[in-house]
Amino acid sequence: MDNSTGYGIVLVTAASREEAEAIASVLVESKLAACVNFFPIQSVYTWQGEVQKEQEWQLFIKTDLSQFSNLEAKIHEIHSYQVPEIIALPILAGSHPYLQWISEQVNH
Image (cartoon, rainbow, N blue to C red):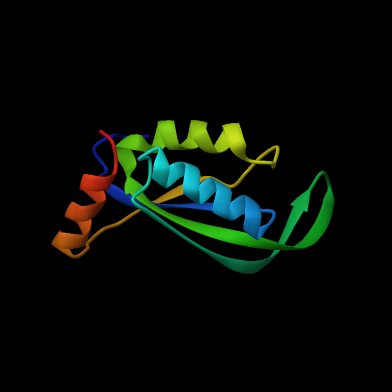
């Protein structure tokens, strides 16, 4: 990932509320994320050749994308999925005070 991309939201799905909360806590406590929101979603996807329909928890992880590699590695350490969703979306614009707050919360 290009380290110059700035701030972003990383999307991750988890199997349960407990797992979502555990991932969120570890990322914030490790200063890899400034804030994580999570909520229940319904997912339909193909896994090992079969269509799955599952209740999951979607995490919205606000971070400095220069930390993406470290954040991704930490998620892989603690996630129950063999292939977890870990995708980053850039924040193209945002309130300067909020973006500054993200910067202050995330290790560089």
